[in-house]
Image (tube, rainbow, N blue to C red; front, side, top):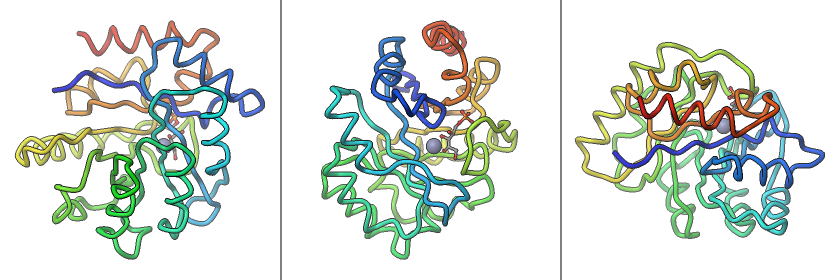
Length: 221
Ligand code: DX5
Ligand code: ZN
């Protein structure tokens, strides 16, 4: 498996000083910026859009930005995120009218593409698109809010997806999002994940480096 990636969710960052906070978490050793986009329609919360992604690029953030779209419809906002400097764009298949078309739209724009599965979303959406995926993201909470508890059934789902990825032979990241903490990250990795989103676990601590280091130590066990 490839090296583990830690992706802080900026949902729990300080929006009043976002550039500085993102810079700090990257300097603390995080790998990827996880950027949660919520529309108060597909999910019951409202967050940030392409202008904020562009603002982070203008601020000088060069790390990969992993845009997690919790919006419906999805297609019309994708070109704006491509132009705003997104690196990875993931979306929920049930929020797209044409999943294959949406994946193509992302890939044609030069970004990595992925599907996101809510805790109760079945995996059959993977059936005909594995060749177009760079990332599969399993939600381990219901989308909409940070600070929720990890749903244990995700571990079995992770194992199933890990098997499918390995059997496919494709180079696909397995990302997990929601309730990831220092004390469960090792179990999540053992179930097959190789990319870990963590919002409150990192940003609610005064020293981000301490948490990132503790997560890496757990992952090295
Ligand atoms: C939830 C978001 C997550 C969330 C994770 O809808 O997709 O990225 O911010 O936050 P924590 O790590 O606090 O569960
Ligand atoms: Zn997310």
